Image 1: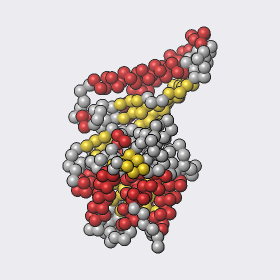
Image 2: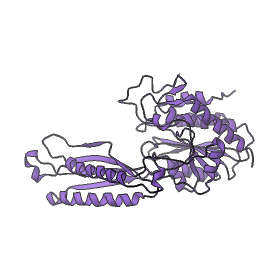
Image 3: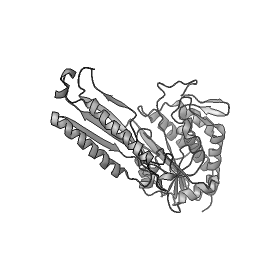
Image 4: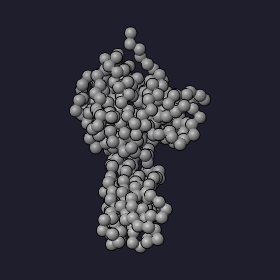
Length: 387
């Protein structure tokens, strides 16, 4: 007889796969695929271009419109440099908490979703439950378009997508865009004693980073609009978290690399900010090229679209009915939900756990939150038994 794992047991399995975004996630994806196959659930693995990673989509129930899809991601952030008191790749239960990398963000919800699909297999569903498990969410939401398209191409369109990111089971109807703007500054190397003949890529990048800092100061000082006031913080943010460049202290740096984490409130557009960024880049690049023509200041954008609150959204209505939460909630972090919404799905973000625990050493999810997520999906399955 094929074993049916509890959601708690599934979480043990999922956390044991060290699916850091820089590494492959295929062992986890194949585990989910094989587990579904053992229970008669067909799934589709969707590989990336070089075949080193993949997403997965699956469905249980009749292939009719009006179902619900559960969305989660398989990757986690690194543990290097963090001070863990437990093994990050093994779930440790203590003090009413489940510790381990990804327990909160977001393998806890993924385990609950997998368990829900297996349970659904033995139920008389009148509408389907679908599952979308993406790759590379933590490095730019890269896998979300693939699994969103996979649902559309292989199954009847659902009425709602529930993205189970940690919201403490609050119904979140909107979040900021989350765009990664990656920069490469090319300078001209000379000995630092001949500074005027060279172009330091590091110093030019630093000048731009100072411009970024000033933008944040100005944005924070403005009175927020009614839309911006829905977010915390209530303004668009630009953040430079890493910078790398140069070869020696006495050589003007030839290359410098950095990126901006750009998160726009709902009534500001990424396109407008990119125009402002381009204008500042043009000013600095013009000055660089007056010293040496082979210099440049380039950037490219990896888009992470916002989730925009929907008017009479089906996903919001469903999530409020399942959780009883009637509050108004938005968040500043990004999710795969924006890509689903761009594909025409109704989207809500609602899942167990507190985002404050995500990416932290000794990451954990409260057992009470894990159980609340299970109860929400139990009510969802019951609702799918009616037409």
